[in-house]
Image 1 (cartoon, helix red, strand yellow):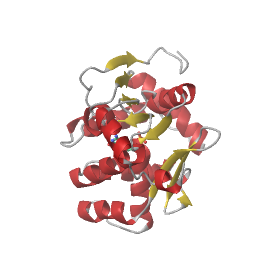
Image 2 (spheres, protein in one colour; image 1 turned 30 degrees about the horizontal axis):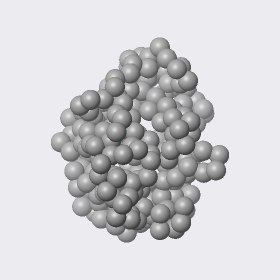
Image 3 (cartoon, rainbow, N blue to C red; image 1 turned 90 degrees about the vertical axis):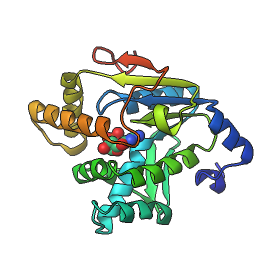
Image 4 (cartoon, rainbow, N blue to C red; image 1 turned 180 degrees about the vertical axis):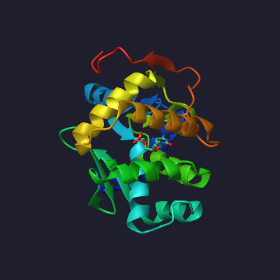
Length: 230
Ligand code: DC
């Protein structure tokens, strides 16, 4: 990608095809449904780009924490979107890299502190609207698999193909438990994780802008009993 492309500047034709949803696949669903895993596999297999919209919430939350910004000050947090350069891309080996102002924060944005902070700032309409604009710029009309909570319903409503992944709380908690162990070497009780997931689901479903919904026309897949490959 050229540097212009990397920062998501659009050419007129790219902007047009983005509006028409050509070459766009969206995957939405609750935490732990398998969105990231499936979206990355799909992007690799089809030779499309991959956009993890959750990573934009995480990157912003990371930067707000780093700057000591009060997370409840929505205007202040949202204002950061215009002042920092967030870059989300797949590296040569297909792994997601996230940068804020040129600093690689791929690893840092998965911390538990950032996970909690991202959930807080994702509640504010003003923050969401700024990040949605960023997500559209990041896609900029290129063929992409976008994944998140509201990509088919709100960010890219004209996407050509929409999927909604779901799984039981029990299965999602087990996946999260595994991830915590792999990522942070931490063992946590599955009951506690299940409670946290339910709380996060409630926040995702209730917010006014970009709530978690099954987009109209989406193919619904329950991944509870499926492997990633399936
Ligand atoms: O999928 P994730 O855990 O990386 O998402 C991080 C946070 O961002 C999480 O609290 C949900 C929120 N999010 C959102 O509100 N809308 C999206 N499209 C993606 C993520």
